[in-house]
Amino acid sequence: MANDDFPRGLVPLRYPNIPVNAYRVSTGADIFLGMPVSLAADGYVGVVNVASAGAVVTIGVAVGFAGTLKRSIATSDPYLDVSDLTPPTPSSDTGDRYVMVADDPNQEFFIQEDTGGTALANADAGLAAALLFRATSGNTDTGWANLEVDRSTAVASNSGICVLLRLHDDIQRDGTENTAGNFAKWVVRLAHHQKRAGVNPIPA
Image 1 (spheres, helix red, strand yellow):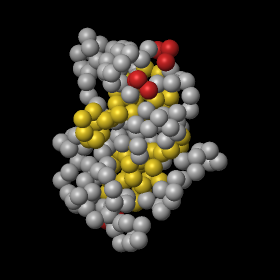
Image 2 (image 1 turned 90 degrees about the horizontal axis):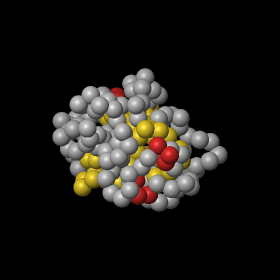
Image 3 (image 1 turned 180 degrees about the vertical axis):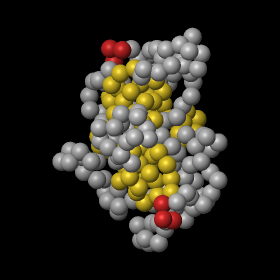
């Protein structure tokens, strides 16, 4: 049978038994679960350009949100909707919004493959790739990012935001195994992590 079609962005493997840290959020774009974020020179995190063909630096992936004293944010939204919040800005440290980030540079994630171009195969493990949004940046009902691997960008270089490691050992809703092809789930790691000392500086 066909692979399940359920875009969720980058989902940490072995969650919740993984390192997670809280980072303050500056004003900017909405942040959804499974969305990569980067730490800027002003000390705040925000979304990154996941579709860039270049070496996109990241601090990790959003796995939750919090407000005052790290409690839940004061909204019913399952994602961090910046239009509803008043997070801190670089000129004012009075905000109280945080994104909980899976920020271990060795953390592995799984993510769904898209359907454009030629399907990826097992032999493509080790290639770098960019991501893309399907229609919108996230699902406002589930809180998950609408992110998928852009298989047309997979290249043997250090470009892209993630590295393909292997097909995910996953079972579909109909009981069949995850297989190569449309909507295949891949295990990946972030290619240019900001916690790998001496490799990727914090962007200005």
